[in-house]
Length: 95
Length: 477
Image (cartoon, rainbow over all chains, first blue to last red; front, side, top):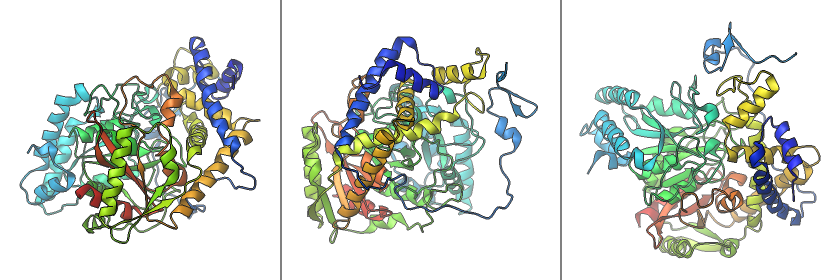
């Protein structure tokens, strides 16, 4: 197996995802098969080849640091699952 | 002829001559949606009331002589392009009730021209898929055969155009998501050069690959929409400050004399190409030669690695982009959980579908400590080789031809449990995203089962004009 059940669960934790226990075997197998296929890349010689992160040549898009209008607070909070006094509310972080 | 059957170009002429009103046209399209939506399932949201109001406003504009190419034209929009005040769900439970407080740049451009938005179309969740089966809300059926997929991820957009449930649509293409559904539904779809169209307000999937583009009934309509949506935008730091030509002029050039057409020899040996697809593509190549173009064999030696490269890079970028769905700022939250960590994990588990989770896991794994060099770095290096293949090939030709998909539309449910097989069907479309070049899908015939087949015409960077010219001449002949 290319990736173990434990590894899938560990990566799921890193991605802040619960994975349903009943589907973990199928899930690990599917991901394992995909990773095995991706191993075909190892047959390519990439010595001294630069990586491409963007296909188009781009430089930093700088602009003047000038104040300009942005979404106001109410609009930004409009879709919040829970808000109070203009803030996002989340469950307790520190016990 | 029914009004909903009009192309954008035809409707524009009739509106200009005041032979029809936008309100009549929009109502005809909305009624068409109402009568077919149960069978096709193209739309997640239909905006009947605002559409009629927008049409009335456009009619007033037209009366005053203030008419642009899209004034009063009913369009549909893939449900991952932000529309102010209209739900934008990405076909995900996690964004089921998300109403964007702002418009994507492309929406602003369409509205400025007075286009009428009739609704938001179905798609694979967060654009991850090739069949539109990975939608939280519904399955979209191919208008040519309702037991089959419309393609994906912009399957709702392509089906809505093919079934005359709008005059044209905007989709997005990360690995073929405009071209493949256009091919399966027998319509035209263009993925512009990376950076040609602003991505501001496009919900991000894989940021180095995503582009917005048109899906339309014919090539001329694609040119009209490209004129409307292209151009630099300071809100998108990856948009390229380059002048926008008048793309409709490409549809006024007769013949293909002087055009060199590249035929990649590697594409001949790709396994699993359907015989009807193969024969229709061969016929299309012959027709293009008869139009005056010169054929030339070109080499794209790293073709067979495109799927492996893509299915590392796209999930890696997605795993980062989708970290924002955490139940805090917008979207679904699992309120049953009492600690922050439990809330994050449960919200994302319940809010995201299986394919999205699969890709987040693969992407996170490929970026994680100890695996980064083996997967992400390696894939990014092979991506460079794919880019170099195209740069080299375009030294010898103006366009490159290929099928869009190896087979016509497959049956609903056929590949849903086999993600790798589904991924492999993207072989012809992925390279244009990895290399950033523009590519169009244009109908080129039918299979023995009467399913549409699309021809892909890929062009050099920012040379949408040539692919439109080739596509237009091919469409006409």
